[in-house]
Length: 170
Image 1 (cartoon, rainbow, N blue to C red):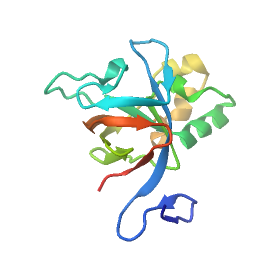
Image 2: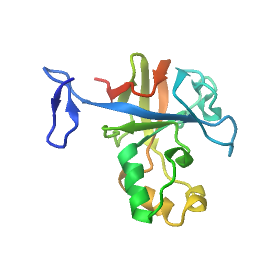
Image 3: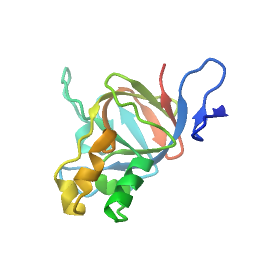
């Protein structure tokens, strides 16, 4: 593990750029509006995204931007504090919860998860009106500063598990 930054996050040392965080949660849903299922590990493929998640499949040559979604644990906690609720993160309907890691807030940044999986950030994951069904004010609380997360496409597949490292791929 590298040195600590002033904010307490880990920095890779000696010439490697980036911050190392951890994968704190994995969730998927097999159909639109279906219940979210949390898992401790899963396969991720370029063709189908997160195994068992209906959003992962993008037809060959497709330009879909939302194959996998990621959100920062601290951003969810801040939104919960702002609205005065305690709702489990998977109800946000994102696939991956990360901790001690600032998600890139721009398209085309590559993020490595675990040993093999690489995703390309495509767009901000805007909160939808369904968030208001969970709690009044949640959509607004998730709107600033990419707090609702980021959408990504899978560039390289593999196996991921809770606790895996996550970092910017250089």
